[in-house]
Image (cartoon, rainbow, N blue to C red; front, side):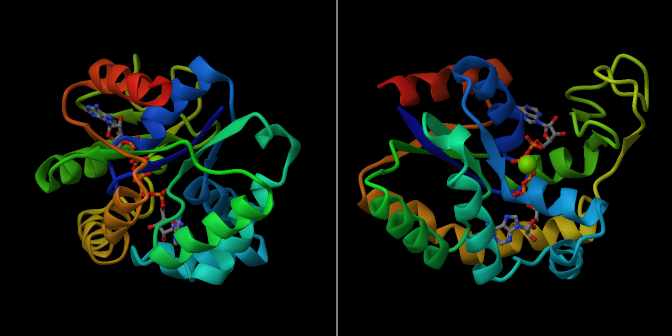
Length: 215
Ligand code: AP5
Ligand code: MG
């Protein structure tokens, strides 16, 4: 049973690797960032609250995120495992997740920590383009679409994420260093972390992830 977290700084490749993991293992990919963006798109109250933090590259308050994430984990499709992407992001969130899982007699199998240097992160974030319609993700240099500005999957328009401008991206990396990095220590102490080099190419990184998940 795979109950895993993808940990790593903004642009480390969490979403990209998660998409490959879904294909391989057929378990749901739960990205709190995606859930917030969907809510922003649909103009919900939650979306409005989250947007003011996301646009600055700050974290959305813990109570809001914890409720959304644990609520999602109670859905039927999570009973055979799940991939959490971008949650938890603070020690408090991690503790609450542990409590939530323990209450259900479940625990995490492994935490995948994707390691990528800051300079590479900035290149990935500022060069990322996403499909407005289906959310598929590209990179103008590393993973360009077949036709510039057009999604290979659905033909939708490719746009830049609101928080992928240089200034906000830098702040996101800073916020990661301050608030999320301590989780590496947290999961190291729990003995369930797998540190994986995220700069060795998409396929190599995926194969390292598979090894960690299947160990
Ligand atoms: P979220 O959406 O989770 O953003 P993030 O953590 O900043 O991560 P990204 O989605 O930017 O990067 P990624 O690691 O998924 O990289 P990707 O695969 O796309 O969160 C956004 C915001 O929501 C937060 O700032 C916060 O405000 C809020 N939020 C969410 N969760 C929260 C929580 N738990 N608590 C509080 N607030 C929360 O790849 C990036 C680019 O690189 C792409 O262009 C891709 O094509 C390219 N790329 C990927 N892999 C490779 C590779 N191996 N080689 C070359 N290029 C690659
Ligand atoms: Mg992502």
